[in-house]
Structures are given as C-alpha cells and as structure tokens.
Length: 109
Image (cartoon, rainbow, N blue to C red; front, side, top):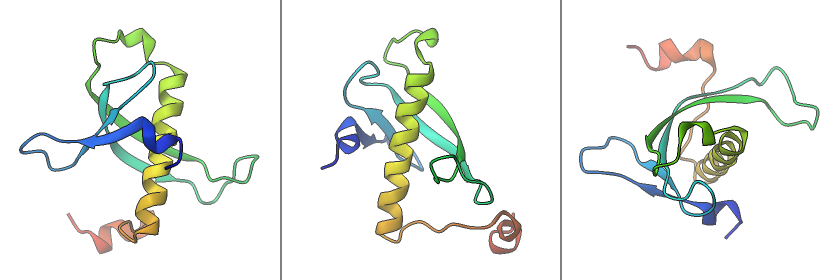
C-alpha cells in the first residue's frame, strides 16, 4: 500500500449517491469531505511536466476543526488523495476522460 492510501478511506451514509472521503490520520483526522467538479488543463503543463488540474470540494464533517485550520496543507492533502483516486480508477478502467466539447453530446441534460 502506498503512503497516501493509508491516509484516507471511503465512507457513506444511507441514501448517499456517492461515497465521501474520510481522512484517517494526521492533523485532519476524521474530516469527511467529497469532491465536486474536477477539470484538467491538458493544453498546459506545470514546470515539472505534470498537468494542472482544479477541483471543487465540500466538507461534510469538519471533525471540530476550526475553519482557519483548513489552509494549503489541507488543500495539498486532498489534492494528493484525488490524484491517487484518479490513478486507481484509470487503472481499473472505471474512469473516462471527456473533452469539454464532448460533454453536451455525450451526456445531454
């Protein structure tokens, strides 16, 4: 198991459509959150050659941690977790990357 996998687990309540993520250790232990929209800019690369991505998230349970404590270290942690989740889903072929221009034709509202 890689280091990041030990830092989170999936949790859900009855009636949830999607699983939430629960942080298992460290400063943010027991914080539960989920991801919203995730986008990757495949036209630009970071200095290290990786692709920049943006994501939205919602904190479901803050584990009694004050709002001011959720800074860059939290954002970096959940970004690392998201990369791990995406990598795992791509390996299992459970994730499909869709160009923005294809969204309306592939998934009409």
